[in-house]
Length: 193
Image 1 (cartoon, rainbow, N blue to C red):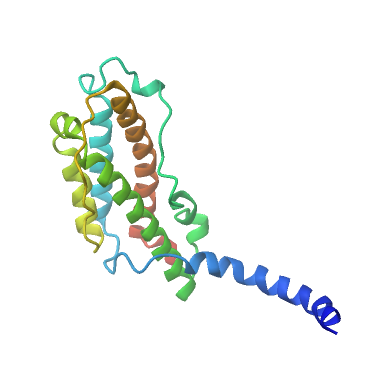
Image 2 (cartoon, rainbow, N blue to C red):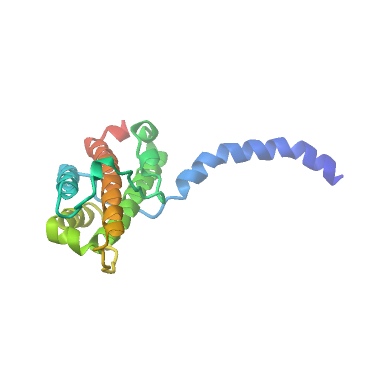
């Protein structure tokens, strides 16, 4: 009967699902984001971006009345960059390694795009740290082959909006450290050993 058939096939189906889950998770990555290898110049772009983020966070005129160092950070929660770009996860070989690297690069691109859209809509940030978006754009244009996302300018002169900018900058600073480490790791070639 059907019930007996299900009873004997259920463990096999469960085992099959368990074995295929990690490959499914990796195969859900987006198409290739960069056929260009991560180079030393990409490492330098991330370091420069970190400098610009730190400069922006230190702008007292931009955050009048707000102590950014005491604020929580707002991270982009729509990506898995810290997980898929972790060195222990990236040790691999062959096709599996390629999928992991592409998943890491896809998540990095999605993070950079998310923050690019947010920050290019910040006229006050651009006024106080004019090279901030330039550093972000350089990293995106020179290390990835995707088109830059479009943005819409909004008014961020209210205190709540400046607080949000502060929290988002702090989150971006932490995420950029992760991105910098991942790009440095890929640039070194360690992920292929």
